[in-house]
Length: 367
Image (cartoon, rainbow, N blue to C red; front, side, top):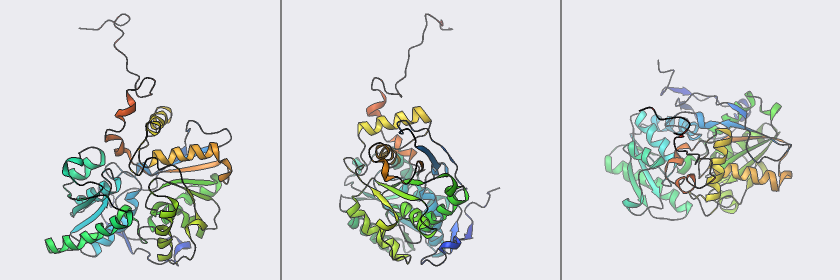
C-alpha cells in the first residue's frame, strides 16, 4: 500500500482564501499531515510564558522539514507542465535543495542544484544536506558569491540552459521555493493550526524566516481570519530592509494590498556573522536544548529561531501579544551533520560530552 503517495490530487484551498490569486490547482502527495503540537519545556523561558512546538520536522525522513509542504504544490506544477528536469538553488547546506533533489528522484525527474557561494569543487564537501543532494545524483552548478537578487536570477536562468542542453523541459523552483503559489502551502498550514486548536490555545506564533514564503503564508492566514494572533518571524538570512521587498512582492502577487509590516513582526538581530554561519554560543544552546527537551535544532535555521525567541522573551516580553507561544519547528536535522557541532561537543561541561571510562573497580569487565 502506498497510501496515495506520489499521486496527484486537487488542491483544496481554505474557504477564507478562495478570493486570492495564484491558487494552485493540484498537489502531489509527498507526506502525511497533520504534524503534532505539544508543550516544549525550552530551557531559559521566563516565568509566566508557556512555549509549545509545531513539529514540522516530522513531515518525513529524507524529506524532513517544512519545505515538503511547498514541494507538494511546486512538483504538481512541474509534472503538469511535462518537466523532465527540475532546477533549484541554495547554500551548500540547503535543506531545500536536499528535499528538491530527493523528491525529483522519487518522481522520476532529474535534479539540478545551483550552489551559492562556492567557486571550486574542493570547497563543496560531502556532509549534511550536501551529502544527501549529491547522493541523489544531482547535477551541481557552482555559483560564486553574489547578492540574493542576483542569485535568484542565476538559478532560474539555468532552467533555459538545461532545457536547451537536454532538449527536454526543465522546471525552475526558485530559491527556498518562495513563490506566490507555494505560499498556499502555508496558508493551508494555518488552517491546519486552526483545526488543531490554534485560537483556543495560543496567542503568538514564532517562525524562522529566510526567503519569506513560510512566514508570509502563515501571516496571510492569520490576517485573512481576523488577525487573532501575532506572527513573529525571526530573520536568519537578511535584514528587514532587504527582506521586506521580497515578501511584499509575494503578497501583491496573490492579490493583497497589505504590506509585510501590516501582517507580521520581523525580528532582527539573530543572523549572527551571516547566513549559513553558527557561533559557538548558538551551538552550545542547541546542545542544551537537545539535552533538556530531546528536540533537535539545526545551526542555521531553527537554532537561530529558537535563540531569537528566548532572547526576545527575556529582553522584550511586551513584543508578544500573550503568554502562550507556538514555535514552528521547520526541520533542518541534517544540518547537524556537517561538522559544525564538532567545535563544542567535546568542550568541558557540554551536555554532549558526558563520556566516562568503564568503572572497572566497581564492575569488573567480563572477558
